[in-house]
Amino acid sequence: MSIMITAKDNEKIKYTKSLLKTKNRNKESKFIIEGYRILTLAIECNANLEYVFINEDFEKKEEHVNFLEILKAKNIKTYKTTNKIFDDLIDTENTQGILGVVKFKPKTLEENLTDENRFVLILDRIQDPGNMGTIIRTADAAGVDAIVALKGCVDVYNPKVIRSTMGSIFDMNIIHTTQEEALRVLKLKNFDIVSSYLDTNNYYNTVEYNYKTALVIGNEANGINEELVSKSDVLVKIPIYGKAESLNAAISSAILMYEIKKYLV
Image (cartoon, rainbow, N blue to C red; front, side, top):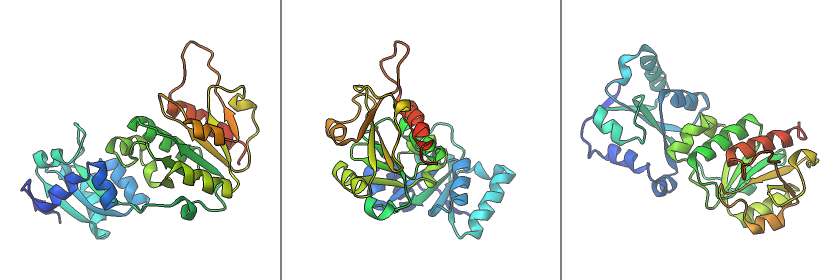
């Protein structure tokens, strides 16, 4: 049975709305997921789903009613509110009438990168939420063991990023750390640092990759910072046959991840 809330100044409403801001997500270690599909994926992946909000229209579909029964069986609290108040809790225009609040655990690289992990993706100041989400989804598909998001990247729990991951946010081991710590731990664990970089003669498909590889993808406009470049073991580039200056960061990462994966299977 859903708990009805009709006051916009209700504490649960205000708290949930606060999670639309990065600083509050970081402070509370929680983020919002919105939409029936991603909520079902959260349940399938055993995400730490704390509670759910639905609007007045959500229960009109039989499959939605069945889903609420699943939430009830898992003792996940469900709140119901008006369509107008619900719309204030999300950042999309076309709502499916359901959102959830998920608890996440901040991770350290040293504790969450195991000796069995052989393929790591390092993201240097990736700013576009769509790119970030697509990269996470592609890394999941390509069998990347961990994603290291360096300082300066867009928040991976940004609602736009979450939507772009198509559920892969629950599957991927995503770790936030500094560049210095990333380089220290990866070198300690015998990873080769491979950076995507235009000013090199090494084409990505002419290089033999190490059995433990950390691929660096840089900022959409400025690429990888020079210190990371200088600390890299290998620099690689993707050939440009037409007149475009460069490739989109998400596209570049996909090409490189799948090429490297061939050496790690």
